[in-house]
Image (cartoon, rainbow, N blue to C red; front, side, top):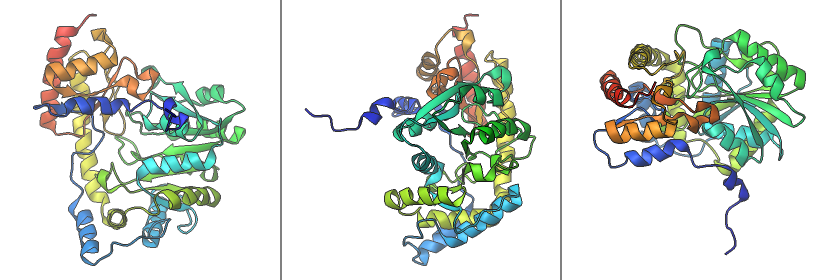
Length: 388
C-alpha cells in the first residue's frame, strides 16, 4: 500500500512528554509534576473581559494580524518593559500561542536544508518544528556546570555555511536557566558577524527570580535581526486561551502572516480580548503568582538536594531539573519507575535532547502540599534505588 504521510514525519519522534501522560491516565492518587502549566486559574478580571465580549456577541473573526487594539496595547507594553518600539500595524502578529509563532517563524525563514542552532537540552518542540519545516536542527550541548547556558563560543563553533538562525529560549524549559544581558550579547555578536537571524522564545520572560527580565531584541542592533516570540500562557495563567505574539521587522512579519492567514486565519477572538485585559490590568496578579512560584522553587530545590538528587538552582520559569545519577537509572527508567512505585509523575530529561539524559524535569507549578508530598515519596524511592 502506498504510504500516505510525508517523509518529514518520519524524522520527528512522538513527544516524549506525552508517553507519561498516557501512563497517568486512569491512575488514582498521582501527583503530577510533569505538565508545564500554571495551577492557578486565569485572573478573574481577564476572564470577565472575555465573558463580556461573548455576551456582546463579539464572536467574529478579527484581522489576520490580530485585533488592532491588542496590537497597539502590545506595542506600548514592549516599549515600557524593554524600550523596544514596534509598529503595531506592520511589526506585530497575534498568534495561537508561542507554539504557532515558532512554527510560522521557521517556515517563513527556512529553505530546505537550512540549519538552526539551538541549546540542548531545550523545549521538545524546537527540533521538531525545524524538521517539519525541512530544516536541520543543530543541538548544542549545555551543562549544569555552566548553568545550562549557551555561550558565544558554543554558537560560533556550531555555525556552518548552511546556518540560517539561532533559536534560544531563556528562561529555559526544562532547566529554569536564565541568560544575563552580557551572555546574550555574546550570541548577538556571533549573529551580527555571520548575518544570522535569532528566534528568541520569551514565553517565560516575566517568570524570573532575583533579577529583571531580559529581552534579546533589546540588545544594541539586534531588534531587526530578532524574531521575538512571547505570550500570555505562563505569566498570566492563560494556557488554554492560546494567545501569543511575534514581533519582528515588517518583511518577516509579512511572511509569517501570509502562512497564518491560510492555516489559522486569526487567533481566537475571546482570547484576544482576554489578552488585551491582561496587558491593561493583569500585571499585579501576575506578580502575585510569580512570588508564589518563587516560594515553591526554594522548597523544591532544597528538598531535592536534601534527598540526594543534586539540583541546579533555576532562576526562571517553574521547573527544577535534578540529576538522578545516584540511582544508576536512565532518565526514562527513573520516570517510569517513580510513577509506578510512588505515583509521582515527572518528565524524563532526554525528552528535551540527548544532554538531558541523567536528569528529570519537575514542574513546581503545583500546590505546596503536592510538592511536599512528592518530595516524601521521591525520598523513599531514592533510598530504595540509590547506587552511589
